Amino acid sequence: MKASVKFHQTVPAGHLRLRGEDVATFLNSQFSGDLRNPERGLCSYGLWLNAKGKVQGDGWVLCRDAELFDVVSVGTDGAILQEKLEKHIIADDVAIEVIEGTSSLLLQGEAAGNAVEGLFGEIPETGRFLETETACCFPGRHARAAHYHICYTDASAAGEAVAELQAAGAEPVDLAAIELERITAGYPAVPIELGVTDLPGEAGLVGEAVCTTKGCFLGQESILRLHNLGRARRGLYAVSGAGAVPSLPGSLAIAGEERSVGELRSAFETDSGWTGVAMLKLDRMEEAFHCEDQLIKVAHAMGAGQ
Image (spheres, rainbow, N blue to C red):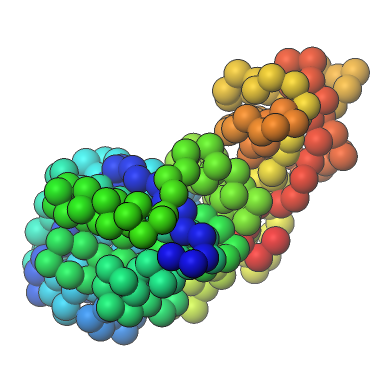
């Protein structure tokens, strides 16, 4: 490979397969992304919410055909997601199974598209995925430059892909490097940074991971009420500090005050200290806060459009 390719190998927290005559309409009623017109090859990122609009998980929904879908999530446990979805199956013809033993590669770098083309024969377009007998590939949400997720249902196939990539000059990168690039790009991690006490609008995800035009879905009423009529009281922000990585979760306060104005939810070491993500009260926004006697600086709001 003449240009650089970097990859990170991990195990998805959740990989479900849903089958049945009603699976498309059922998923559209539970998922924040738009699944109104499912067709083979469709890939949609979105959230799983509760009735109050709070974030229960996230992931990609992949349409293999009208009655067969996969759900892949980096951070949401498959068994927990299965239990959540099954609670809402009433008279629907929908069966859910957890796919075990999956492995995932994240490819990025100047030649990431070339690497994907070498493995799949083409590059997936935005909102689409490619598949083989053992893998599916779709655009990711970790960086501003083009990058791709490849999810393998066969661990040996993933190992073969890694060997092929390394033989062509690709380099592995550690999780911290991937996460720092994700934070810079403004993509929140679910459920670590955006979780069960939070609303999508607090992370700038309404309109991006939450469709506002598709009609009824679980949590829609609360989401749209805040989106159209109100203003979030809190917001998710990238922050940084110059000292050692604080304990997590960490309470944030304005200098000279004891009352908490936010919570530090993630932090990753950098050459000059650390970078992380915090949920902050918007009515107390300052340029800097304190956590464990460290000065914490606010970098930018999280959200892909920031």
